[in-house]
Image (spheres, rainbow, N blue to C red):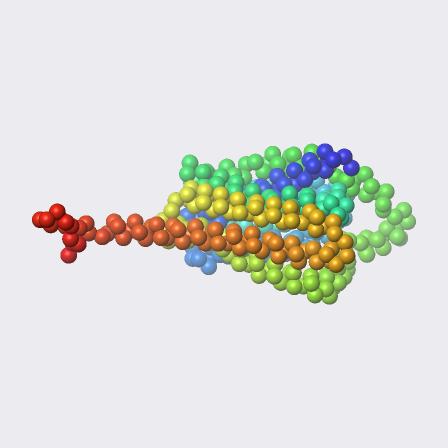
Length: 357
């Protein structure tokens, strides 16, 4: 496989993932003005993110089995980009709360296709010992999407309303979908037909037993659940993702409601801080894992645990940076409010000032 083709595929998948995260995080930035306009409670605001995540996570499993059955994954990925682009833009045209929920559900379903397709493509393009680096580049779409989504959304909101901001930020998705459809290299297409069994009975049996069948899926899940390390890893990821996503959903609302900050300031703060710290985490994991993934024996068996241990410190820095930012804003605003409401000292005859009564 030519190096340029593989690099182009990674770059294109990164672009898709950045667009994915931009549309995903945009609702968090505008949750407060949206909630105020529709007069919805905090529970209803949280349900917007919950509806997205339920269909995003639940749709990834059947979509992943579908990905392994199609000869060309580019149309599938391009269709998913169009789906979330259309419904993300439609979010800006919603007139009531049920319409918002439907739009977020459809965005979640559309974005559920991205990672299964990306991982499937990268596994076909790279040998097992080469995959850590391209996967690291692909995952850089998370902090980059946070950077462009929050900062770009804040800029768009500064120029107009949150409704027009959804339309503006979603517009590049159409061009990205066209680029994926016509420029994404599909390594499977040339060999997919050749690898199918010639005997129809064998072919039918292969489809029954194959990667896209329910039986294969249940078997794979049974085997995975029998591995304690896999179960523990999924449990820790579930807890970490739950804490992170809930914080992401309401951080912008906290800054707007408690401290009265405009959306543009919130977008710049969350985008720059989250983007920089996230990129540092991805870079740290990749640079720390390059030699780790080429190890053999005992160290190779523990590479994932060791990588998580290294990344823990970077993620803790990210957590502290975000919380310290909120604390700094609170301290500054409290001090300014105290100065604004504290009476000025009264002058005395000897030139000294005494506190006002």
